[in-house]
Image 1 (cartoon, one colour):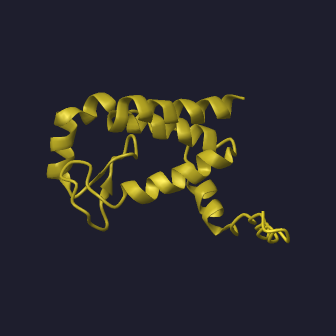
Image 2 (image 1 turned 180 degrees about the horizontal axis):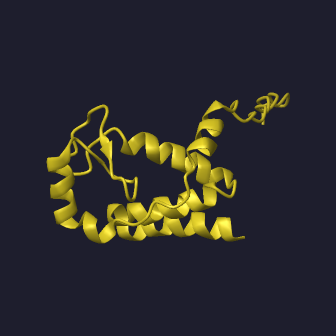
Length: 130
């Protein structure tokens, strides 16, 4: 359906265009997540976790970075890095962030992990030594 297409298109954009496509890829992922696409929700959680750790401009790893209020896909040390990143090309990449998925992501992070399939026991030794 539509949510699968949004999720797959977001992944394709990232694979083909790299970091420049991040705002649009995250928007598509948010649209799919807002329609309960589980892979999109898990991907969005991981992307948010990774992005909010380093400045999109200087790449410094810090806590409490400021997020771009429009695309919500770029984080900055402060106004100087945000302005420099904007001038370096973020202005043409930035887009509306799409649906607010904060409640969906919060609920997803609180859910128990999916059960894993039991491991098959190793094969029994061949009594004939073959």
